[in-house]
Image 1 (cartoon, rainbow, N blue to C red):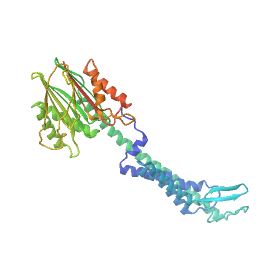
Image 2 (image 1 turned 90 degrees about the vertical axis):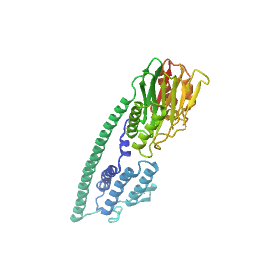
Image 3 (image 1 turned 135 degrees about the horizontal axis):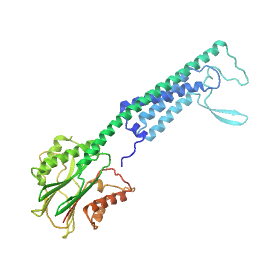
Image 4 (image 1 turned 90 degrees about the horizontal axis):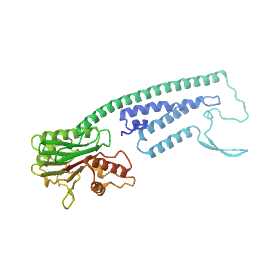
Length: 410
């Protein structure tokens, strides 16, 4: 289930240009504190313009700095608040100790007009008409300035948020389309023949996963199934996983042997993906006519084989490189006798690495323990294994994509 987006997620994932515009908007909005300190002053006097400017820049800078630098580190927010609050306190007169009949008190700053008009206790102040007019003019300018700042900051803020929400809505639509496409690539039913049953499950970590699996009846006597895990997850990984499936299907029409399939898919990925991207791959070809199962892995977790003959539990993993790392290389594979009742289980590392609250991973031992139990069908096994991983980790979603495929000979 996709995680609900919060407003803070939009802020934390903004691109630098939008983030700078948001910082400017909050700078203007929170900078209004500077003019407001003049309007809230109960004493009538002229306020130094330098005071207003410093308070405006400091209060606006505090908010803007949190937006720009406080997204990833909590200590950055604490440091920013401390620095700007110190500037505003010192600009207001700083902390001072006042002694009166009730004892000592801590006073935060002095009157913002004290440097021009020192306070004299018990002395009534008088203003000339010109001085009084200057005070009213200053307050009028400050009031209009505050209103303009509020209007400009609010308009800019709405513009940034509207643009960001619009862009994210478009991206979400594209992600949903990619999700639907990927879901359409996953087999929607268990493949059943007279001699095999194959079923699978895929649980993506995000809306679009990097895992893919496929089950293809190549001919009347041959069935191929595979699991692939593209590095990373998200739309990019989902697109590449779709390419992997296309390359697999195309090659199966010509030569379904493991060596040919891995070689062709490897070259396709190498040509289409960047040098940092690779795909782990597990492949099986069941040949009922030859009573043989061909297995191959390329950088993938081992295939679990539960057999009717001893040893009943075996893990198969080849030393092949993951696909897409080097072009034109050969891949080894192995042949296993096809025995009625045998099961072959493929999965991605998201299953093994699913961790609980203590950081302990699900691992191969728990996988084997679940696999050794009796199940009515391969569907029941896939469901039970997925439930076991969820119960172990205590969560419905995982840090990495999780895929399971089970084939049982009948």
